[in-house]
Length: 435
Image (cartoon, helix red, strand yellow):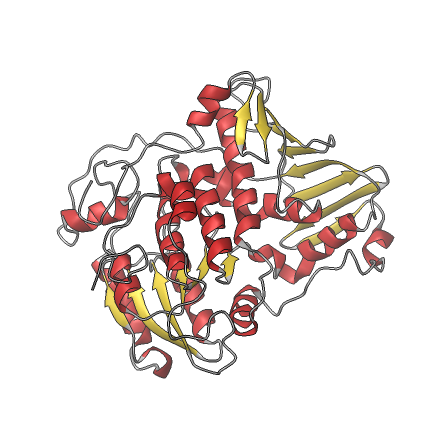
């Protein structure tokens, strides 16, 4: 078979660092040949694959398999014990009777005849499978945050839009947690607290450089497997804090390090900043200024300022707090509060009301079958991830920055250093066989 950009047999994958250009210049099918496109109303079972079988994917897999018409046909995981655990989990289950295990996710994409995938890998491994899936017309559910960098996120969002696949970002606060966040968002949209002046977001620390020492590579992991774990990230020695061996019940520390993720700032910011963007009707834009705290050691207090003067402030212990000219509303995973409790009982106008899917995964699966958009599309996920990345850059440089949300480019003072951080160092081209 000829090796072309559309070919499922194409082994060469290009890095997320070039994601924007890739999503623009490479052909993107509107649907895979011989299938019914986005509308799956024919009733054919949805052939589903999973990228990564760590703690998050394990927690989600049962929920995916409970969806009507889902057939799990592939699990891709580089760590042998976790892959074996995934295959054992689906063994004997009729919904997974066709499932095959892969130690290379790109091989799964090429061979498993997929309709849809869930990407539950570390953040630095989101862009490559997301973009490659979109190119093949494969629907995507990608865990949050959508991307490690601004450049990667733009590439994913463009690929999703151009391909026409149904894309859901795992920002499930839009759908779940007692609908506290959805209710807060629609009240804010409807003017229940007047004009919004400030939004306070309580999430963790910005990312730091990864300076972990080298550890011996465990006997169960080959050098090739570790190379695949690194993927498009810069090459470095193994450390078990990044990739724990075996099946475990903790969230690994890769999320702390800017080489792989966005720290606690992005880990929960991908949820709470997302609700703020949604409530402010800014799923397709962002702030224009980034103002770090005056204290050069502070890890809270950074402000993101929108063109209309609304301030988004990284501080506090409250998940999301909206402050307006006529009151305030706070939303969290276990609460919904307001300056006047009667605010929470208001009936919102039709233009402010938000959807109420059964849950986040159901929304995605039903959107595939109905040929519609999702509650957390790729563009919204990219704009939320960008907020986290802008804040991280602000904390790193400790300089006031001007951001153009239309061009997705820094301008004015300190722009060169900031624009350098729209992407992160990595392997310019990663093929699955080393750099």
